[in-house]
Length: 332
Ligand code: 13P
Ligand code: SF4
Image (tube, rainbow, N blue to C red):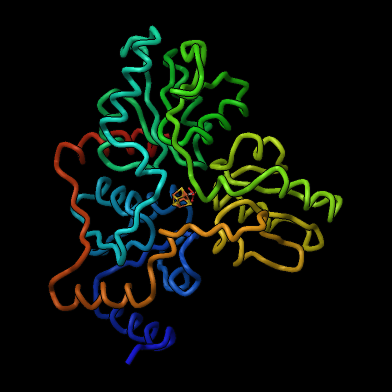
């Protein structure tokens, strides 16, 4: 017989008391999974807090690059994921596409010595390793501006992968010039040269959605994630990472109306009479939603039985260089 969520929750709590395991959950997880997280937060907070945690096992409820980043930063930890769900944006680039991007820049007259690569944390370890080997670093949506500011001090052209929107939004915010490989001519003129990747969930928000809310509720604020298209971020009152959006909304006057452009589970948790989802289509991240309480229970049970499932492994060379790229970010 299928267990109810309440029964599963009880069993999960019982197992957690017996085992040396920390449950980590991103804001985009289903409510019932998010609620059992010992550590919750945005991508940067999860990476930092999990690094400081001492449990033998990390049970990561999120998408694969997140669990992989924990393993890369702390290879002695055993990282398991209830679902090996992948971020569709992270899947848009691998080490071959990364090399092709460097080649495209070379063909545009930019020598490899003059390229500093930055990868959004939403990328797999092989891409992070390539970036680390070339002297570059990782960024997240909450620290991208700091990372780019530091990177620019080297006086090189920035290759930004995989999210063109985050790269373009930061460039616009800092008054820099950006270009997208394969889309724009004269990429050599730009300061930030972006790979043409994107998040399909954040592409759902449109200028029509913003116009609709502004017309319906004059004075409403619009808060969006920097994975949205630059046209959307330019038309927003606030742009920030998941944690930054939550903080922004919690600090607003309760009577202030706000429409939020990021993943549904997060916005739904914030929803009140004055907080709206900035989309007529439910902006769910299908892969973040794959993980269920039952998956968490099964994964904990496998640890108890001595045969953990869905354990994350990263080969030594990839781990070494990806760690360097992640640690350069952590140091800032
Ligand atoms: P945050 O770093 O803002 O949590 O974003 C992660 C993510 O995948 C957004 O789509
Ligand atoms: Fe990846 Fe987009 Fe899902 Fe975030 S919302 S995990 S970027 S697919």
